[in-house]
View 1 (cartoon, helix red, strand yellow):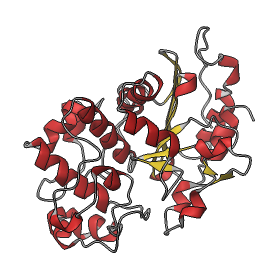
View 2: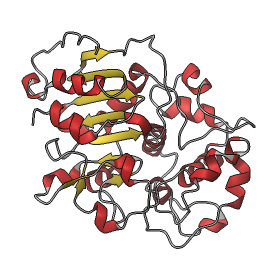
View 3: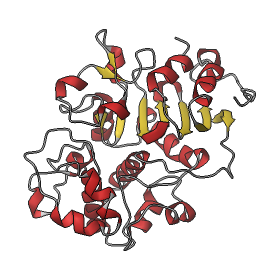
View 4: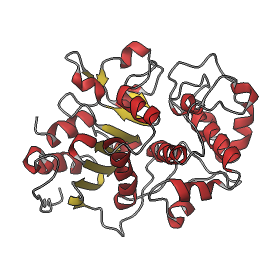
Length: 322
C-alpha cells in the first residue's frame, strides 16, 4: 500500500478539521483501486494523493451526467433555459427538461443500444427511441441524457463543445477535446468525460456556491434537498444522502442498485451512509469514481478509482469518524 502523505489541517473551516478522519478514509480508498484522492475544505486543498495538476485524466463515467447538470443550472441562472420547459420532440409531449435530468421521462434506459451500436452512430439510436409509458418512473440510463443533449443543442444553436466550455466549470478546451464522441463526432452527455481530480474541483466548488450560497435557481436547490417522488435519493444528476436524517435510513450501494429497476418505495429512506451529513450530494461514476460535496461543511472530497470493492458507506463512515 502506498505511504499516506501528510494531511494539512488548518483552522477556520466551517467544520472543525478534527471532525474529518482523512487518514482512515484514505487507507480504505487506497486498498480498493484508488487513482486519486483530494480533499478540499474552507478554501484550500487539505489533502491530496495522486491528484497533482498533471495527473492522468481517467474516464469519470456517469459523473459526466452531474457535470452536464451543473451546466444546465448555470445556463438557467442566466435565463437561457428553464428546467420546467417542455421537450421539443413531439414524441416527448409533456416531458420537461427536469424529467430528463431526473431520469423519469418514460424513456427506456437503452444502455446496450447507446454503448454498443450508438458508439458508431448515436443519432441512429436516438431516432429509434420510444417512450415506454408516462413520465414519473425512475429508469436509470443514458437515453434521458442523450435526448437532453439534443434539446440543449436545439436551444443553444451552436456546437455542444461551445456550450460545455461556457457553462461547465473545468471544461477547458483540452478537457472537451478528450470528451467521448461517437464515430461521427457527436458528443455523449451521459458518460465519457475524462478529468483528473483538479479538473473536477471547479465543478464541485460550483455545487457549494449553488447550494451553500444560494446561487442556483430555487427550483434546483429545492429538488436537490428533497429528491423526487420517483426516487428520494436522486435528483437532477446527483445522488443524495438526505435519507440519513431518518431513523429508518437504509444504506444503498448505488452501483449495485441501478442495475435493475427499483420501485419508489426502495428509495424512500435510502441513503449513501447513515453517519455522513444528510446534506451530502454525490456525483457517482462506475468503478468507484466519486465527487462528494457537503455544503454545511464547505467540503469537497474527490475520489477516483478503477477497481472493485469500493463502498460509499465504507468510505464515508471512516471519513466522518463513525
